[in-house]
Image 1 (cartoon, rainbow, N blue to C red):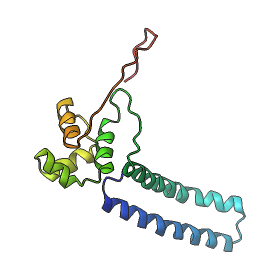
Image 2 (cartoon, one colour):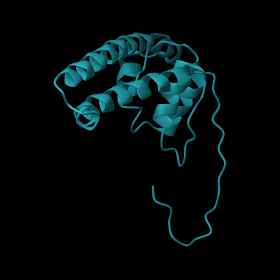
Image 3 (tube, one colour):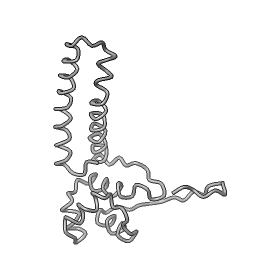
Length: 148
């Protein structure tokens, strides 16, 4: 997950370089006389990495526009907290200042996607981000417990 503008810029630069490298590699494979199916089979692993990086860039751009993924049973809360910071254009340092903690704490929390934080701490982060989380509860019609 891209967490800040520097990582985003680096990923965009890597994407551009990777795109050029893919085109050059495809051309070299054609020059060896391989057919299109053989070329595609050779290119698939490289293209898979490229698509993954493209998805990370696209995801960061969606977050900057304030487009968030739905969350179920609090799974994804850490990702949402990071997304809210990104959508507001705040740096980790600015969030740390709002929380009254060292920037390394915010960096560590985000690296771990806020895994294991308390609801109280999540509430403080939401408050610092001037965000409110609303929930709805839906009861399942089965006697089976819902998987966590």
